[in-house]
Length: 348
Image 1 (cartoon, rainbow, N blue to C red):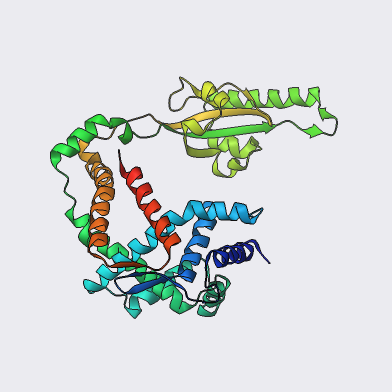
Image 2: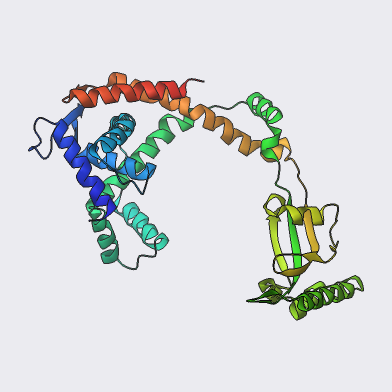
């Protein structure tokens, strides 16, 4: 039995203990405007939440599993109810997934996951205890939630020019480019034997590197010399490496190229492999986008900040208008805890 099956089995056992009617396969936990969320619905969401939080979860005991479930269940049940309310709103607005749209998404799923046929996809779904019908229902629900968010929330977000300019001036550092450098390298390896590095061979490699650097300084093309002399894999590309963020370079290399401009060449450098010569092919220092260039990005950031607040207002309206009929007191308590946690997270 694999880890996923162990988790599923353990969750089923714990929930069965908590339920006075464990023999009922589809125990109804709550009705939301007449639609039901069942015990197995909740279990599936709990398992997904546990796997997302810790893919390698291996509960050491029932106590540990109960603690893990207690941690994820409040958010899980709130999400389940909210998703149902959003899907119901989507149906009211007439949204649905056409067969053509579903088939297009399936083809993209197959392409992205290198799945060659429908049969192979069905086999992959079977491993997750899903069918194509399950996949379609899941995709349709996701699509409806996205469309409702777009219609009811995103289209109503207004961002003024004043807000844009104020945010830009206060967060200019968010719109700076990362310093980058493109290098060319020539590496001369020092042979290493079981006895370690031979001093004479080390001296010979250093002398060869100094000779190559002298040719560079004399004007011979770096790319050709890299192809002729370098022991690095980059020789096939004339020693070209990058562009790289400066912060990704080692501290020693950052120090070695400090102060060099485009076309500058370092002295021969000692590395763990041998000796190296670096040429600066191009430099891109930190620059800050102008307000006009950053306008769309600024708008996205402001809208993103407003989106959560507008979403909470909208979902709270749907909750207030809904008839939510709880059939399980423990799950209801978890839901109420989840609402409080959501409210606390949204408070600045």
